[in-house]
Length: 114
Image (cartoon, rainbow, N blue to C red):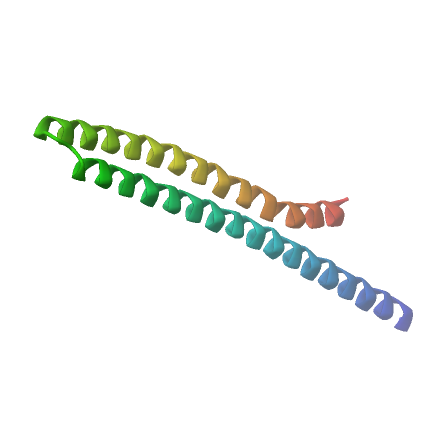
C-alpha cells in the first residue's frame, strides 16, 4: 500500500514538474516573440519618422502649391501603404507567437496522453 502511494506521489510530482517546465518554455517563447515585435515596431517607427521628416523638408523647399500637394499626396500614399504592410506583418508575428508559445504545452499534453 505504501509503495503504491509513493509511486502515485512520484508520478504526481513528475507531472507537476513537466507542466511547470512546459509553462516556463511557453513564457520564454512569448518573451522572444514580444521582443521581436518591439524591435519591429521600433524599426517601423524610426522609418516612419524619417519619411515624415523628409516629406516635411521637401514641402518646406517646394516652389509652388502644386508641388506641395504632390509631395503631400506621395507621402500620404507611401505612409498608408507602409502602415498596411506593417500591420499585416505584425498580425503574422502575433499568430506565430501564439503557435510557438503553445508548442511546449502541446508537447506536454501529447506526452501525457501517449
